Image (cartoon, helix red, strand yellow):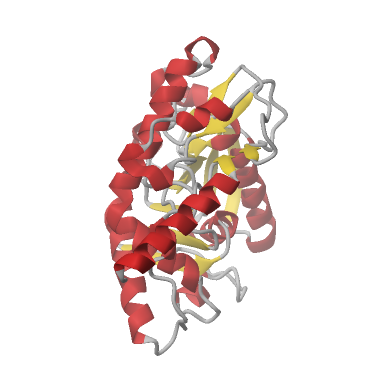
Length: 329
């Protein structure tokens, strides 16, 4: 890109990020890397696009520590429904953390009814997992529960998996790219737009064990997506082609914003350090918008305080100062 065009491009990104300030869990602020690889493309017989997609998938497998990965066009909810229908069977334990674990329970209930591979479902609060001693075929839970600003350490879930002789499935939507230890899971699902910092529209299922179940559905069968029998999330993938090579640089801004927020709101915090996710913070203080272009995170639960997310200065990378926090009232 020519020097004069580079300036125009950067000015465009700056202008767009000044039009709206986000305290939401994803997508975050618009970055140049989200757009740099955008092009006209098609998912079959388009070698330039296929090269970039393969690069993205290789990076994601390394990030989570899994041998296999399949990309889908759709939200993480779609990926999780496909994961549950294709992998889970027998006796399943759902780790209860909030709204999104309740959704996992719903998806398990529906899978049990429709496909009958799951035979029994039990839920237990994340606070009580040390008490579980009975055996399970599968454990499923959210590593980061955005509705409550809660992190359940994946290592704790892995210890539970070992103790109960189960396999571990993770909703990694709000933890991938931000938290460690995803390799302890047997299968996980996530989207492109939270901790990966990409544009919305893509989701992924990564796994180290092959799916067990026969799913008599075109769209809910993992095989259909593996064989790319429908339109893919091409432009979301291209955003990740730009973002992932500089992911750690972008992540610095999240760490800065998280630290600044913890310092500012230390009297209002609700979680200890072990259960504080990098993505967001649950505070007992109820924030309000100072300006109409300040977008607060409206959680799907009726909570007394606020969940504030820390992706609003992604575009600034290490130059982030947490000044966006001054917009909170």
